[in-house]
Length: 283
Image (cartoon, rainbow, N blue to C red; front, side, top):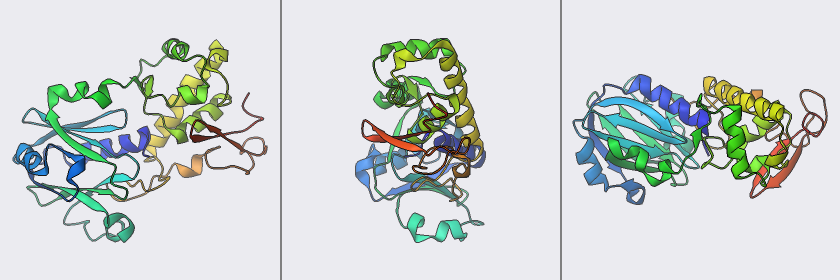
């Protein structure tokens, strides 16, 4: 599933590409993931101009000048492709693996399109009044954003205390506490801070907490600059893969030597998810 850096990549790119564009239509062949119906959604956006884009956790929000907003969640395999007359025939957009699963298309008055490709069809689109965006159940339940300047070591410690008996690896994935961290960046942040994923949250000292908060911010910012990574089907709005994969220290590297100390990387299950760590660099 796309995590914060991948979603931020999409939001940033859309902010550069579609702000000011006017919607001219909408098509969908997967109605169950469109709300309201595709006909109503098309009526609600036709003639409206894009004011801006923003992110709430892993939600993409496109604000319109008619006091409405599109809220989009990519879920497991979704990605948004911005196609113009110039790039429509590019290699990235003609690969069947990604181009063959387009289920929703937004059209703009200038002839460009924003196409939602989703292999597993879990992603969804919703049109709501802009004032209602933050009241949507899936957004209202979110905790502080993982890249918020408000996520200090003190605030983090308070959040951990709410779940202090749980492993820190579980706490980091709890979107009601901290929004945006997923499996990839959990493992990487814990490695950079020297904390093992199965440590109970209540065991973390003040210095460890400070290191972990800094590591979260560092890895998410770096990944965002590199367009995230394409673990699975993620592609950016140009149809290109993320470039963070070469920077991974532990995620997906079970049995390989640690890049810092050569100790073999281990994998454990926390809940239903895999967590990766170095038993030498992390305590």
